[in-house]
Length: 474
Image 1 (cartoon, rainbow, N blue to C red):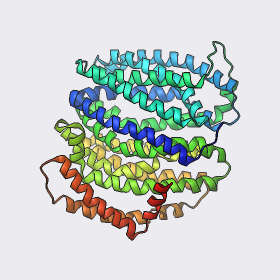
Image 2: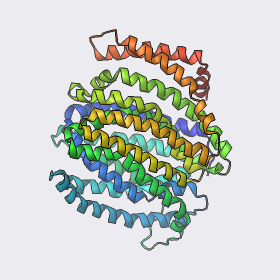
Image 3: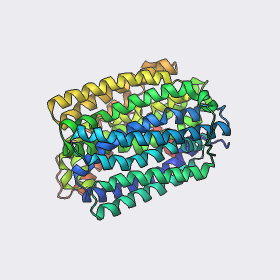
């Protein structure tokens, strides 16, 4: 297995990811102008449940394959063969589950949608082992090329189907094509063998790690999807469409900055699982960059929320603006916290990750319950923002103090310069609001320039420019 540095792995992953970002923005902009908020809301409800079944089907197997260095190719094939039968069972159960789901939401359309998405669920389950095996082998180039091909193929299919007038089915087939092409690509790349009769020996080797990983994944699922579950039921599909669109926009930085680097952390840092200080040192280099970028992005999205929604999706999504304004204040915390899972895994301690996840879902559920009681998606957005920021402190207590054995207070002190920079950028944001522009693009640009200048001054004043310059050089 060829060794590879975090720098090189992240560069490969970044190249593929940012190509996909550009493509996704274009594709989303097209689809958002063809489909209605209700179309998105309907599919969002179903995908919440497919995501849960996906978490169940994973069973913590993916990260466990990466972490365990004693697995043989024979073990990998046995685990893959087991997953085939698990994929069939889980897909059939989901088809049956779509019936009570339709009754619960009082909409029969969820039955055919559920039956179709069971196909996506099957291929996603089958892809768990091949994808994890590629990560274990650190074959990031193959993964990057696949990301681009899958992105273009699945989105192109969705746009064609949407233009044909099939409404929300366009999003359904987007998921199916995505899962199917991903599996076929990875399976043909890895050459893993399928066996009708298989041994459980490989599964027994990863059982202790995978059980806590699965427990955390289930908790993490509910903390990230319980809002969609209850909004669709108690407030309505249209409200869910507006909220979900805003929420996904605020996840762009995490998905396209944090998740560019973190998928490479576990495969690489897991080789140093007994050297906690090494893991902490390498991780802090990444955390500081995510912090400085996330702070600016979050504040900018707050002040430019109207421009962002209007430019990306059009005027029909105006109700998403106050939601994105609230949720943008959680971008900093979510960008940093989103990288923590890879470090829990690299340190070989999924138990602490599971415990921190229990606190996460408690905070999230409380915030959503309060928002549902108010009957307002903006209130839900506000309360969730508070919960996400509180979750940052809980998660990193368990990671820094309990898992890596480092100073928790020292970790928190490292973010003090960001507070000063944030104050300058915020003042600039209020000033930028006084300047009016006829076009949204011009307005977004003006705010970006004014707040960007304040950001650069803040970096220089608090001497944080060195962190970003060092990162860019590397």
